[in-house]
Image (tube, rainbow, N blue to C red):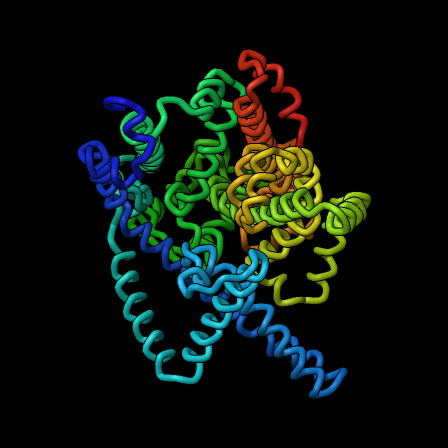
Length: 578
């Protein structure tokens, strides 16, 4: 950092950057360059996020009408209309809270010059924001404004789609590995005429090099912020980072988790075969190979080729790091259906990550909100939450998850069809898992609620929401991060167990637990890899999340001894998360 620290205390971050912009601009230029290399992939990801957002908004918008139709069948039109109005008001109120939190950093009541009590001001603020949201919704529905917005979004989508077609550094087209070996021994269709194994290995190396370069650049950005723009020369976070650096068990967990996340994010690229052709629609895509009997290049569908490359023991086996008769390279061999096992596993990692993150985020949000509210208000709210959490925790969690999964799937509920049951599992794990996280952070929440700064905030008339957000949530954030990371590993192994039993993610969506189940009959044969490798992957990633949680816990605890990181290995490996 430059000159005297005291000069920085009264300046905003924008002012500090304006006085010394060179380091920030150089870092930003490097970030833009790295992101430009993957601009097509970023645009494609934005399209997927947009589709999810559109689906969510359409579902929320249809909720009042759906509930009203359900009530109308049993209670009549008056009850139906009342249900519609109540549901719409509740949804608008929730939208108002979200809009206020994300887009309205100032107080509308203060800007209007209205003076009321603190509690009444909060209610009036939320009422005004909700009314504004309602006006916007009505305008979009009954005026041409909605049509105009649709046109603009359509143009925007077309532009993003055009950008998403751009070739990127890590795309399959940049370093193709699919091809065939000609009669003279040369390879056709692969990158630079290399063998599929080498071309695939280079592409994997490029993907991980890019991912770690991007992470390293973000770390450099943090160091630039710390040295050039931070108000203080030292913060407690510095000691936490130093302790984590010396926690080798936590470092192991971090490396494996990062490798897992990269595998999930770049799954379409890392697989030696395209998933759409090999896993989802094998009879609608063709591959070329050199037919030695006909001495010419022939073609066949992936489905027909997979029938000849199944790993079912005996002579029918394509093992690790081997080619099949169609010159396709299989680093982990093939499964019992003849599909590439590595492609199956990397796309299964994507499924596990999506389900695990969604369930864990929902659990963490509910647990954090309840922990802060029960610690702040105590009394009846705390009692009700204790009873509810104890009731849920008293039931065997896995059996409850299994029961709910079977119930929704047998009823053919629409939610059970989304992501082939993945969304349903995420919601079930969230509903049954929040009490565990709430219990884990309840103690720290009660402790911080008794601190002097919280009492001072109350006495100065600060709203309860602002007090919980500014003065209480930062205190429990570290604890939540630790227990949430461990819970994520528990969700992953729980999903794998359900899929093993046939009640988890359904085909054709790949899932690790189902791979273990389907390969189980061949463990004692030459095709042992069909079940053993997916099983090792499940154990490794769950262990890694627990190790990462142990490392973060010891890093944020000032009383912890960083040299004792190895002692937590056995506990981390044994745990399965919340």
